Image (cartoon, rainbow, N blue to C red; front, side, top):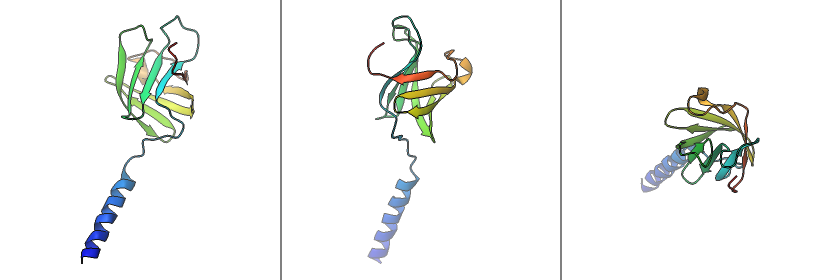
Length: 124
């Protein structure tokens, strides 16, 4: 009877672990991704990801005070960032490139869809 109970507990733990959402992506990195293109110093749009706690911060530039923040999840090959006012969706192209595929109807930031965000830990 004890062996059966132990087996059931192990099975329940195994099932719970298997059902947990996998929010990891082998190519995704913690750090800052900057929009490619020409921008004035300090006004390059960015998204900063923290894989440790699945949070992000996103803004139109490092010198501007307003930024969105919240949590993110990974579904298939997409990064879905959920902010206070809207949701943005990025395609994870590779280890250094995110492509904005849904800008949340431009309600918060007017970023063009299909914009590339390139990984860099250097402040640009």
